[in-house]
Length: 435
Image (cartoon, rainbow, N blue to C red):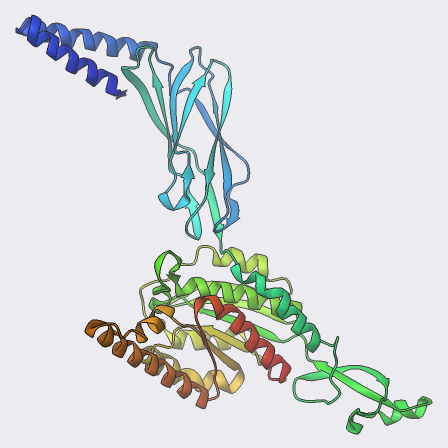
């Protein structure tokens, strides 16, 4: 049961009248009795809530990218013999961005209504509906029947993949490497592409003498980067991935930038004929996807519920899992942070085993707020902040140089430039025949 503000207003007005005209217990009892009669009458005449049938319409779970909107329909059927007038609240968590939160309902007996709630989520992951509450008012609108029932619904909010806009330009560069502009000289990481006639300026070392003997002129071989390479994207979902980078409303966890970079790299590498897998890990494996030739659907689905955890990532577990998942030579892209203590104590002890078999690319998201802080000179507080930021930047730079001396490829870029920077390094490694 629920009561309205109208009942409270009538009680207040009645108290004033009783105080002026009948300031005695009889007046108070009469007022309470009148209000009680009104409440009971409303409850008796209000449409019953319990017989209502509530069902969902549409796919469950619905899927959308972060920043998009999706309508969610709720069907309310009234099998009773009395009209139901009131409100329906289809409750969702705040991060689901539900609007409107309440629906007016006038449902005659034997009919049904479709109530549509538009969801505009503000966070990735699974968003599940809470209970649906129906309130049916009586004719006086003093009191209402009320009931809540669970009507399950779920929305899967996928990563936004904002770096998709960089895909076309990187694919054009990939086509230049991938046989559409074949190279003349064979090198590591290349495979035979085709034969063509010799033209002045071609490298004589690429002449194919047997083919030339069968032809009327000289023939040269062309080569292209090898296909069918293996790329393993490893997302560090530990405490360093939970740190928010950037300033203001655009600030987001490091993990989100890593997800975006992983999607761009997967789209690019799969078009280049390489196989892309995903591993998300901290102290346990959080997601493991064998993406194959068309990895994006599986990767997006696996990435959607990922959240960073406030634990220290077990780099020994990372190394052993990578070596198990990638038994042959692969490009391992480890998306983590260049935190000096974490790298020194966690990553560096396992570098030997990883570099013995694989090409390792450590990709880290730089915080633009730290760069801005390092440039501050306005007052004494800004100078002290700048000094601390400069120390942090110097430590990150020293960590990157130390990894590079061990043979690790290192990429560090702010969130907006991070995904294309990782894609560019992949293209550079592929062009150099190091995959």
